[in-house]
Image 1 (cartoon, helix red, strand yellow):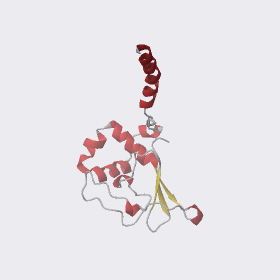
Image 2 (cartoon, helix red, strand yellow):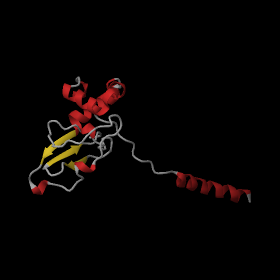
Image 3 (cartoon, one colour):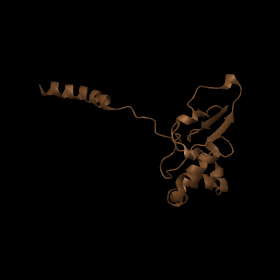
Image 4 (cartoon, helix red, strand yellow):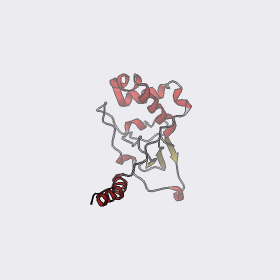
Length: 153
């Protein structure tokens, strides 16, 4: 009887261990930063950060090297504004007006009344900057598209 029980345990143990293993999700790759994030902030970038973070900009951005590097990467490399006038190249996507404003620090942030790609501040909006995938948004009533590149590209 003991032999039969031992044989049964030896046969079933590997099956039960194998059955308990779970599939592991792919871990997030490390974000890739371009060399230009090592350069100092421009006056425009500093103004964009202050517009969104207000008096808390020093505490939450300027004194946090990793967050500052991440924001510079967003502003310099990951947000692309593209004019697409060819109807065949246009894609259905969410409108900029559907994206909520960032509500973390400055309570009186306002949407731009007129879209100007030169002055657009992507930090004002709750874009999914830290998603695995890229995203695209159309600026309402224009041929401008805002492309948010994945930080893992």
